[in-house]
Image (cartoon, rainbow, N blue to C red; front, side, top):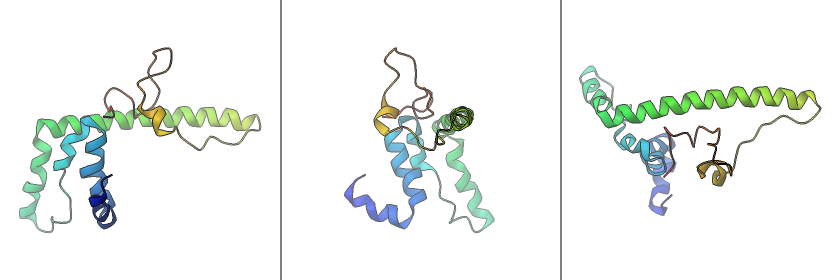
Length: 127
C-alpha cells in the first residue's frame, strides 16, 4: 500500500480494495480498476454507463477468475470443515486460521504439486 492511498482506504475500503489493491496484487483482476461504484446510480439514465465496463472482454475474464476463485474457496471451506470435524473429534481445538501470505504466494509444494488454496489456483495468480 502506498502512503498516499491511506485516505482512499479510510474513505471507502470497498472501493480501495476492489479498484486499487486487488488489481495491483492479482494480475488477472487488473480490469477491476474500471469496476463501477454504485452510489452514482440514482436514476435510470445512469444504469447503462454503469453496465458498460461489464461488457469488455477484460472485465468478463476478471469476473470469470473471481468465479473460479470462489469455487475453489468453497472447496477449501468444505475440506477445512471436514478436517476440523475430525480434529475436534479427537479432542484438538478447531481449525480456525489460514495460511500466512508467504505460503499463499508460492506456486506449489516442495514436490511440485499445486497448493489447495484459492489464492494460488491458476485462475487467480498473485503478481
